[in-house]
Image (cartoon, rainbow, N blue to C red; front, side):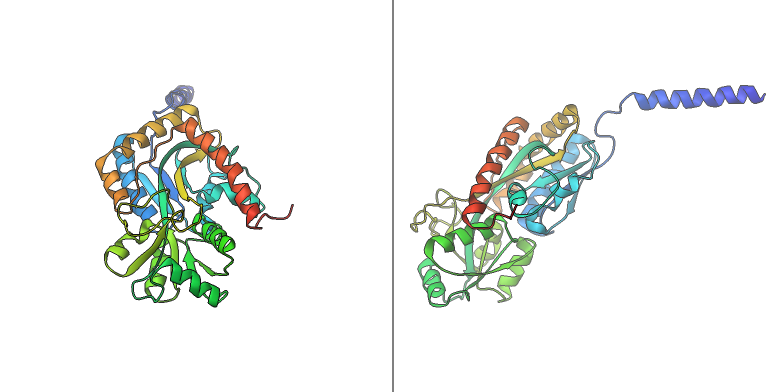
Length: 320
């Protein structure tokens, strides 16, 4: 009797093992998408729209987790200690590609991430309160020259694209600004509306506040004027030969199986094409900006090299 029970138990164990050996179709459980900025900002709102669409396509919930700070690099950092099974993904802002040049880290943004796809990008600009005496860019520069180090501006974090672009502008114009870093657009907008800073360099997450008459756009940073702010000149129009935009996408841990990366790519690409995502982007003057896995990987390599040159130019390259 005891032998029969032992054999039955062995059979159950063998059957269970055989079932487990047959790989379950991916995904078999919820997926976590870690984003680099706080809840309530443009990244959070647009990525949640994308995640909702992807959830329906994948048949599993895509849960958005906010992990702000460190210039937008914490989600990529988290992937370094996450199983390479496709169940944890991260937003990859441009700050990830300049991190090794400014901070000592033990991982490589190119070798240690599996790039899934690029989804959109930020359009940037500089805003001041609507009642600010700095009515135009000329006023801004003039006040900064007359008051070195006193014109305060906020950004979405130290070494983010808004911060580095403003520092490059200041270097070109020979002015000294006072930088105040925040964890994301939501915090930054709350601060400028509260009168804590004189200006804000940000993605067009400031659009709703401009439309509400609370902020004024002094300039935008693309190659041409933004349709939503047709009266705001570009940096190039103001005599600064600069264009700054900031594509971002989604990555998985290194060694994630290619079939899983492809499944994620296909689902998120389809999610990008849906009207709800495009509507969420349009609120912030953003558009879908698709790059497939191979193209996004190449973009990462090219950007990694370009960001080194920018960090060196600003004198921020860490000592070896």
